[in-house]
Length: 494
Image 1 (cartoon, one colour):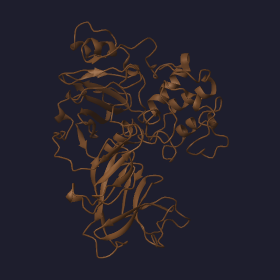
Image 2 (cartoon, helix red, strand yellow; image 1 turned 30 degrees about the horizontal axis):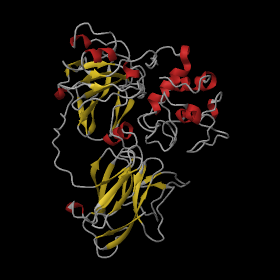
Image 3 (cartoon, one colour; image 1 turned 45 degrees about the vertical axis):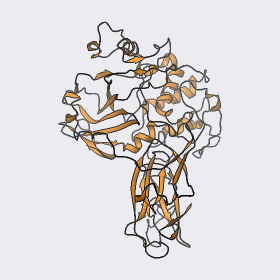
Image 4 (spheres, helix red, strand yellow; image 1 turned 30 degrees about the vertical axis):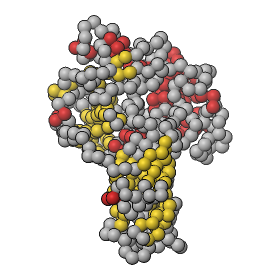
């Protein structure tokens, strides 16, 4: 809760962290009912027998859904001089997405203290690679924000200069990245690549392309599981399609093409949503859902597009700069795809070695045994490596040191899992007596398995973003590993 002096009126603003899908700001008043847990913000959350009723409830003066962020951080009112247009506004932010808002009365505050009759409006003022945990002010009314994890720091809010970034084209065809959309034929300069263990995205098939800048190469880290550091100007393109039909096939069902663009201030994520007739894809400015035709005789498929804030939530660990998730040496160490031959003659048949030989990257080649296993093939020969790889890909972007997950659990493939063995849960036991994070031999008492096995609509389901259809094969892999394959639980290789 923050006391905020706004236009001469002392107002108590309460930033309330949500439960299922909404974060809210309330104006604190004596003796009112804010609705929890019948209501979550303005959404009916747990209706009584007669259903949710707004009678007698006091609703938030501002709210947002989990498409924009998942953990609100309450702020302060601005009374400084550096940003004149912000004077008197209540500032708040979201820890997971790095989005900042300014809240103010829509038509100016009436005399006295604002109350439930006052109309407010909230405006997005920034999207930052920052995980705000607290706000403060100095003697001059300037506002400071603290980040506690990954890269602890305190920064001052200042007015931003005009953006020099060019807008993205309104359609995928206008990007000129593909010479023919009907077959997804890449234009010259797009290098196709693949990874060993793909992130589960509701069963979608993925095509990936790398567009290096005109100069400078990616830096290959010593740890094969760390993502490469790509230079400014790099573009990574990822295409999603439903079903197994290839581009150009009559049954090909494209749904999304996503761009990751490296700029001086970090990565920017841009999404194009395909039309049902497959003629083109349109630039999206916000997240959402869209129905696509299902397979012959099957139901339609609802595809969810991430908002830019949801992209940031996954692609930045605890406020660290945004970064891609997939392209590490452990992921890229596999045979070349068609299209590499145009880069240089006689390239080695390895994506990592070929990138080094063609001058697209600098560093060391992948060592023996450092590549992730291909999870599309048989995994019985090394169940432990397969399961640890799966957890790394699906979970470790958040569950790592400095990650946004509010726990110490480290699910990177190279991490020591001893701390998770038989450890009591930090965030609830799902009502399972004796539940532990990992209970060897018992998936039914292992929360890592149980949370993956929940319905995606459940508040405790993991991963809690980007999945609406469970990964049945991945779940079976983790169950088998816990039951029979944890003979090497401290395995520390990729």
